[in-house]
Length: 525
Image (cartoon, rainbow, N blue to C red):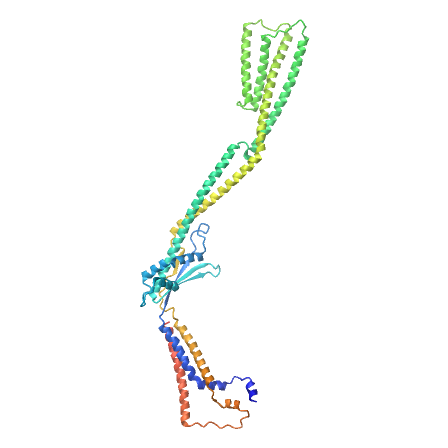
């Protein structure tokens, strides 16, 4: 039966819990008050630390985005600037300037001072929620004195702005110097490519792609002239055959005993006919060529020589009028002389035509060779031109970047302290950042509750007494038929009332002390 009663799950008994509070309230309230007083006192014993904070705004540069030559991420820039600021030399200079960490009985060594100062400095980045871009950051310093905290924070703010401006100018100047070096190299490469193109064009004059169309036109003209000259040459050869046959016929018609005597008069007639023919050919050549053409020059020279011979012969005939053809009739002699002069002119024409055909063929071969060499020259020139154009594009790009870099450098120098600007100056803290006494009050209250609960639990666990009739009924194996009420003496009743009053007094005193201490901590927080 008792085992069955013990195995049954116990229900929450309000009366038993109230009886526990009545019996153990002092054991709970006293640890609660002691725990809270311990933590609360510690918040007043610990030396206060004051934190001064400044907010630095990261502004967009006034220089356009395509001109600024500083492309590093702001977080990396801040890391670089922070490393410069956190250097041992820089921190020691601030420590010595403001006489930091010298208030204690024993001044720490410089390395310990630097390590402590690095712990006291805090940098927080503030990002734009929409773009996740750093738009500002906060610099704070914690010290035992509000004035020292403000001074050190101001020093750190000035260093941030100074190092940022210095780094911007340094990077901009380095970029400009680098661009100038690259520009000089690009200029030298461009000049070298230009010299190669010019040398190639000089060496392949007449074979260049730009001259191909003119070469084709000239070749077509030369081929047409060659065809005309060949046609004229064939006509002249046919005329030569015809004249030879006529002359043979006239000579065959003469009597066997008659002999034609070709005198100066016949020769003069031939020279006159030859001069007329040569002048006609000269007029034809002038219609197609200039006076500097070799065929025109040669024909002019031949005409001059023939004219001189004709003038000499005319002078001779003038001095000897009896000279003339004999053995033929006057008409036949004149015709024969004319045919002979035409034959001589025809021979000269054939020679000139053959020379002209030879010259034209040589020129046609020359232009044909140019056209045949044009594809190879075009490919080589295309490669040289491609290299030249690449060098030109590279040079123009570097020139633009160099000018942009120089402009950015000038604007950075004119716009000093614009990339970083102080949004909130270093504040003078009026309340300590540590310890936070309100938080200590809350922590002490929770600690006191835990100590009280532990104390009550331990005492209740060690107490094996029975405190009410219900506990007795739970232990009995049989039901209780009747109860004898507790008979209290007046002294016991008085003692019980005093105990209850003491409990209320202790509870009230505990909460009054906690509330007063919390109010005091709040006012001096």
